[in-house]
Image (cartoon, rainbow, N blue to C red; front, side):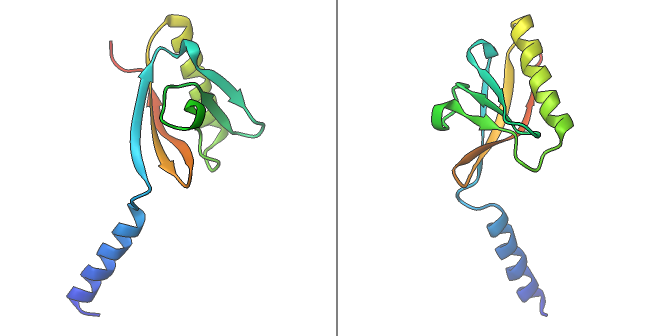
Length: 107
């Protein structure tokens, strides 16, 4: 395989990975109006976040660990009690808004 062919193949793979449908967005707020919901297993969803998703829904991807779901739950709960903002970065993919990262920003 020539260098040109490998370069074209690499570019095609990169374009497939970064499809036009997939992009990262951030929402940040004191989560008083957010609704946290668990759907059994490890699925955790946040509603009314102000995200551009249907009803402000952002959710942990189905392949995430139980520990990550617990960390999201405890982060949002602690921020709500302390009246601190939380940021949630999410990616829109196939009609779902999956959380990619979250945390409490510096004061």
